[in-house]
Each structure stands twice: as C-alpha cells, then as structure tokens.
Image 1: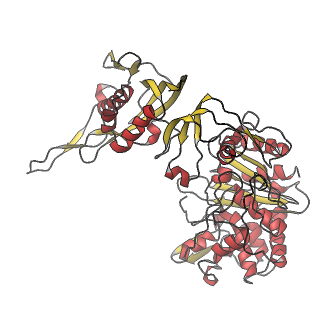
Image 2: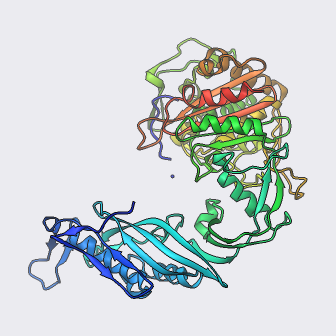
Image 3: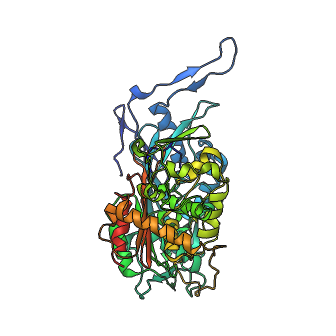
Length: 557
C-alpha cells in the first residue's frame, strides 16, 4: 500500500452516404446485402516516402485514409461473405492463420448463407454484424453476432490490410482457437448447491464461467449425454490461460449429468448482491476447517477473476511475508521496528503512502498501518527464494496443483532478486494472486493448516487435493492472528470491520498498476470458521473498496 514504484501487471447502422452516394455491394443469391460506411473525401489523405537517387518504389507511410480503410475492409468482408477465402486472407496481416480459420468457419463450424453488414467506421476500426445459418445433420439454426476489424498499414509494402486476430471472425475467439459444430465434447451438467438447489445464471448471474468449468470437468463422468453445439474450441494459448471451451449456439440439447458443489445458497446470493453493486469486483468465501468454497462471485460475467485472475495482491501479501519473518526469528509483533519514509534497495527508492513514517513503534503497528518500508527493509537479511519457499511450503501457493473442480490460477511467487525481491515482500514485483488464493491465506492463518479450497468434494471423482509440505508453528500462528486482529480493530481494516465481532483478523492491500489512475483494492479477513477475500480493480484503497464487500459476508457467519 502506498506510493510504491509502479510495477506493470493483462448496432446496426444504415448504409453511409459517401460523396453523395450510398456504397452498397450486392452479392449472389443466398448471401444478402453487404453495406459499408465510410468517411468524406476530405479524409482521403496519404503520405509517401522514397529514397532520393535510387529507383526503389515509393512506399506509403503515415496514417491510413478513409479510402484505404474502406478498400481493405470491403475486400476482406466481401471476399469472406462470398466464400473467396484466399482473397479474404490475402488482405490480412496473417494469410495463413486467416485461411485456416475462415476455411474452418464453413467446413468445421458448418456456417453458411453468411451476410456481413458494416457499421460506422471509427478511425481505422470497422464494426460489422454477422448473420448466418448453422446446419448440421439435418438441423439448422440462425446465428447472429457483432464483431469488428482494424485496418493497419503493411510496413514493407505500405498497403492497407486487416490486422489479423481470430476475434475478427468471432469476438469470443482468442488466437489459436477454432469454431466447431458437432456433438459437444462434453455432455451438459446440472450443478447444485450444498442444499440441493440448482445453480443457474438466472439465479446467480456471475456463475457462467464456473458452470462452464464444471461441465468441462464432469460432463463425461456425471452421467450426461452430449448434444449438438457450435463451440469455441480453445487452442494452446487459451489452454495455458485455463480458459474453458465455450458454447455459442445449442443445436440440440443433450441429457445433463448432475454435479453437487459446496456453494451455500445464502452466501452465494449475498456475494452476488455485493459484487453487483461494485464495478470490477470479485469475492470468495471459504470455510477454513474444511476448505469448502461457500461463495464465488464476480461483477464481470465473462471471466472468473475470483478463481483465475492473476493480479498483484499488494499489501495483503504482507500476511505471507510476516509468516516468513516470524519463522526466521527476525521480528516479533511487539518488538520495536522503524518504518522510514523512504528506503533504497538496489537502485530503487521505495515510498510509504504519503511519505508517512513510523520512527518509534512496533512491528504490529507497522503491519496495522500497512507501512511498506517496515517490510522492505528486511530484504538484506533474506535470500532471494525465501518468500517463494514460504508461500509454497506453508500456504500451498504457486505450485499449480490445486484441484478444486474447475480451472484456477494458484498464485505465483517467483524467485527474484534486488529491488524486485523487495517489491515482492509488499505484494508487487512478480507476485500474482486472486481472491481464491488470498481467502485461502486467511483460512490458513485462522486454522493454522493449509487446506486446499475445493468447489466439488474429492469424493465425487477421487481426485487428490494439494497439500502443504509443512505447517506453521503455533507461536507463528498466534503472532499472525495478533497482528491481523490489531489491523481489524485499530489499523487500516478497522472501518470496514466495524461491527464484525468474534475471533477476527484482516489485512488491506492496494496494488498499483501501470496505466491505472487508482490502484487495485484488496481485502482479506477471517471470522471464526469463515475466511474471505476480495478485489476491486482500479477501485482505490482496499479498506474502502473490497473491505465492505468482505466484511458484509463475514457478518453472516
């Protein structure tokens, strides 16, 4: 938290009138009308360069004119619509990839009778709508969606071309993904909460990615039968990012299998309400004594940041850092420990929030105030791998072996040196986490033992849950609860935790991100046999943004 050195973190329109005429291309029967919009003739400007004294051909440079954008986009869209794949691909920046995906659009996805209608150009970007029909083994259904393309200038030839990405063909495609229509690789599933109620997006709006993940994992083993679907089949890059295959159109429904989860209908409903009221927020609730996930919710409906996000956790990481410092005997909660305004490490100067300082105070006071340099100034006494080992061995983080029942990102705490290692101590540098990871950290502090969080009981499929190689000492656990209790009662978390009674502890965090005016706000806390963590991206300080979300859920315990 504080002024740290920044560390980087991931309509339909009418045809336009051009020069007093409507630009319309009419194609063969079955393909409809394709309309392009453009700018005025005054926008048709180009510049050229040439080498004096030689005979090299002139190559256009500079910004694209409206005429060039219109020409490239028209050629591409018209060629695609009329089935001239080679011609369409030739006007892109990657003809090989474009040829493969556009060929598969007809051959593998079985999409025909395509009509493409361009919208209003904005600079070099041209939005367009797509209408077609998916036909497979005697079954046909209409398909409609919106997409866009961007025209760029080829640096070698100077000619305008479509900047190729798979998302041009469909916005849900990542590069390397494909579209396929056929029997779905996995049968559908019906997922249920711990009380037997069905989990649906109509009831819990943010659960879409979770339900997709449950289908991917259990569709073939939960007793269901596959249907016929148009799907996005993920490629290697998306698999590395742990993105699930995505259904775009259901041709015929299969017979769903059944999967029971650990989600609590009470907590899930409350979590959904909390994130719906705060943009770019995510939260997870865990039961420390078992590892059961009681709630997971995201303001975003398309990506599960709570489970799969990879974000710098800011000062919430100081819980793990303090564990390491206590275990190494470098400090105790009530020992005097200064927190200077600035601290220099390997050429970097680290600052506290508003250049505050604690000249005479205890480590507990510095933890409660989230004073950065009270942690960074331990760096000379640490090895580059100490924080990595602590996170892996005690908290089970960063080993990529969690098996909760759906895809997750399990944290990353890389071995780093110098100033980057110092930044890692306050949750910046190369450290990456999500609310699931940080809820697990608070759960581990509360119980004293790492229990891998899970959404589906391992008894369902006999999978092995991740374990930590060692357990923190009772003394270390006591000290951690002492500093987190102080933070919840008197420190940066006290405002949010007001009214949360019992055995409580909390830690706030703010993580600066290049390009954001406000930092990502983090909050992790426990109350008895409940632990929760949340993040609000670009929201501001964690105590003011994610804190109220987490505290509201802990009050239900």
